[in-house]
Length: 182
Length: 126
Image (cartoon, rainbow over all chains, first blue to last red; front, side):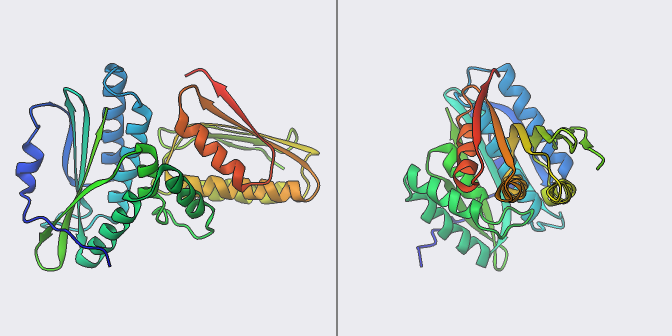
């Protein structure tokens, strides 16, 4: 079993209100509905078209955002009475685009997800491509993606996934995924 | 057999498959929250078409974005087309991708390595 490195605490309101001294492109905290997914993607896409030199691969940024926010839509849990809770923060920084996605998981899922991320992060680009192909060609699947999502994100980003896990209430964790694109 | 015609939406692609011409076109975005529901009708239609297909079936697919749940459904579409090819009919898949969209080119190459049907990678202007 891989080591489960957990952080101490995260104040969600403090996190979402911290713009890292950049320009806020999009932020949202609450229930992740199909409409919220659309709004996030539309806003990001429009911003990247208007700021075409901000990052080298704007389509990759949009693809990755689609995958992660739809993952929260499918797997999001309740948080302080809000169903399918999630939060998104996208910041235009001087040297690139910071995208952060937050949701709540059970402890069991957090441990499994942490292991999966660590396993993905040690793979080379070629190994990621092979793993992606293996999962894609596997016959079992569902609307929730069947385990392909994170591998797809890592393959497109060509960088390590940065994930943080914060204990929250009994047996739950806040999961924060951070992506920086240049 | 009536053609299958589906208008595009911000999250689903336009689909047009006419059994009398054997040309299937899929164009746009495929990022629905429920991909299986969207592709179910098309897959069923292809299965019926496969009972009496044209000598040559041409697939023109051009996607701007697709999510991973769609990627599995698109593979399912291709598997139905592969079955038609395995029954002795010509099938060709024209995979269009925008210039500089390496992700989309790579996705087409992934399908090409799984599906035993001729693929043509066609670069288009963005």
